[in-house]
Image: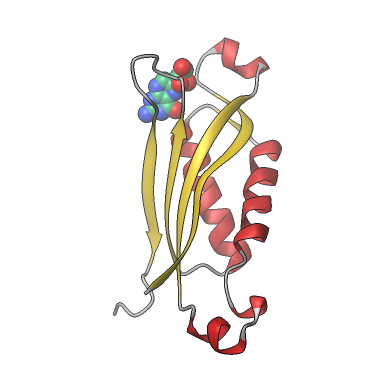
Amino acid sequence: MDLVLIDALEVDTVIGVYDWERSITQTLRLDLELGTDIRPAAAGDDIALTLDYAAISERVNAFAGEHRFALVETFTERLAETLRADFGIAWLRLTVRKPGAVSAAGAVGVSIERGTRPGDA
Ligand SMILES: Nc1nc2c(c(=O)[nH]1)N=C([C@H](O)[C@@H](O)CO)CN2
């Protein structure tokens, strides 16, 4: 399986479990690994035959602006569902970090894998 990568993508969204978090935007930092087969795109040198990381990054940014959740878990799960449906992604790993949420930590967050890896039974 090959991967298309998007690292350290920062988006602003309304997120948090506390009342004070409902009236501000906070930055989330995302890492995405998107399973695919890059050989058709490479053979044809054709963007239409791969996962367009620019288009996917724009979709993530739009999703963050359109939704407000309490939990990072909800943001992550719903975003994974959206990206898989919109872009036909067979497998992905999505890590979402909330920098600054715990002052003693560099970042906190969650990481999920969804779907079936291309090539796996
Ligand atoms: N597992 C989680 N724990 C916590 C979350 C979360 O989304 N998932 N959120 C918070 C608060 O919103 C916190 O980030 C505010 O600083 C606490 N724990």
